[in-house]
Image 1: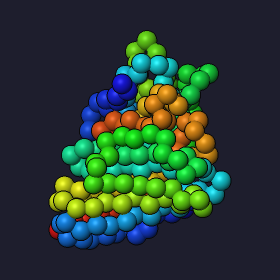
Image 2 (image 1 turned 60 degrees about the vertical axis):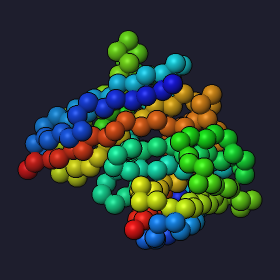
Image 3 (image 1 turned 120 degrees about the vertical axis):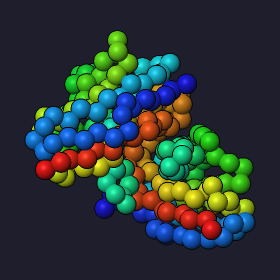
Image 4 (image 1 turned 90 degrees about the vertical axis):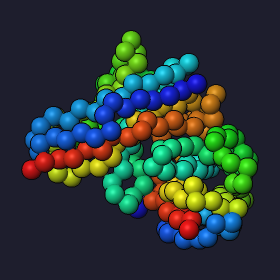
Amino acid sequence: AQSVTQLGSHVSVSEGALVLLRCNYSSSVPPYLFWYVQYPNQGLQLLLKYTTGATLVKGINGFEAEFKKSETSFHLTKPSAHMSDAAEYFCAVSEGKAAGNKLTFGGGTRVLVKP
Amino acid sequence: DSGVTQTPKHLITATGQRVTLRCSPRSGDLSVYWYQQSLDQGLQFLIQYYNGEERAKGNILERFSAQQFPDLHSELNLSSLELGDSALYFCASSIGTANVGYTFGSGTRLTVV
């Protein structure tokens, strides 16, 4: 069974500082991994995804994530936080067609950006 | 606008009632997924349809049912509503059955009073 753990339900960063959101997963097969962002009163927007190939994945809004199989991790980073990055971020894993392509989400990390 | 349309945006209803949530997928997408987001359970997968057929089932209660119609829109029916069913219900769509990431709608916020 697939599962996702996001360390830290809340993260506070200063504008211009590094954003680091941690995600560890469990999967019985090579996983597909995703990061989504949810702004208040909105749906989830795909930031980036890892399926196969290059383990460093670049997404929208300057975010990137690195798949580390040995650590079963897929941490999300952004070098310099902007006020507009304040949102909730969800890491998700999928085991593909074998699991019906369902996404299993972590509990989310709410990011606060201080001026 | 993600291209996935959910109606209504808000719904307030009483316990014991039945409601229907509607989702129109992004143009060209054949798969529709339903998710429930609540404070205590987080984001939970409910059910997936592909081109009118049920493909996968998650933690969907027996009081809940869904279907996908020939025009590919989907409806989620929730009956005998309880206070605990209050949540955000999201629909998402994708082109096929390969998981390249879904496109989510903006959700229906259901409040059961």
